[in-house]
Image (cartoon, rainbow, N blue to C red; front, side):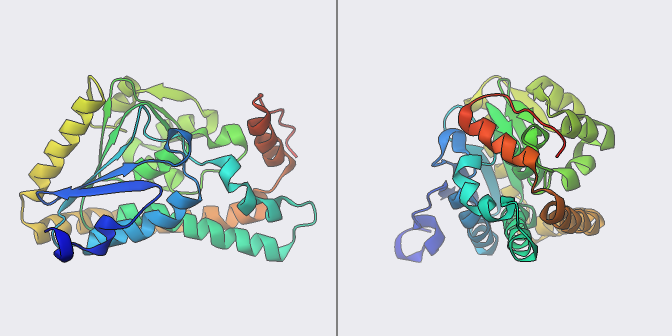
Length: 283
């Protein structure tokens, strides 16, 4: 499908993604525009419309999700999102700013949920750093593979944020409660070998090219199966966990709207700008 017959999303000038489609497989690549494909405003506004369009495209039967350059994604772009955090961080912030913040969290969750809800299976190919919000993103994928240089971190605890885009809801269903608690409460980095051992990724390959090739091979095999049956398998697999995930996302959105604004969060953001370790005081 080319030219005038191609759906509009394929030629849309996305700022955070590129999209190509061949042989019933779409490749979606994170391109920033922030350093390390960090998730700034463009990512959060473009993700849901893009994955909804992929879901609606009958020519697409599977999706490969990857990152441009050396890294998958550095996660949430805090400096770029400061304008959205500003009102709720004000010392006198009351119901109005907190309600707006709650709505913003729900909208951002929708950007990741669109990946999980896409009826076309999503295969993530991860290389380099995959941090914070990027872990939320890959946890919404159906299958994950990595290159040997991949590194993962549920980093939110290091910047005084409770992860609210899906990691805490989905990771226990992928790697179990114990591993999730260890990664979330420490904010530690793990390498590809550990990620494979705990089940975060299915396989590890020598380099980025090999991992991306493997992801495409998996997607091509999926695309060769009966499309409606593939969607049925995914729907049934998702059904058993959807209520738990939805409930967790609702709860963390409400929790963060109520309690996330803090001196520690302000300190974390200041430390990012000043390029120094934060000094948390539990306030």
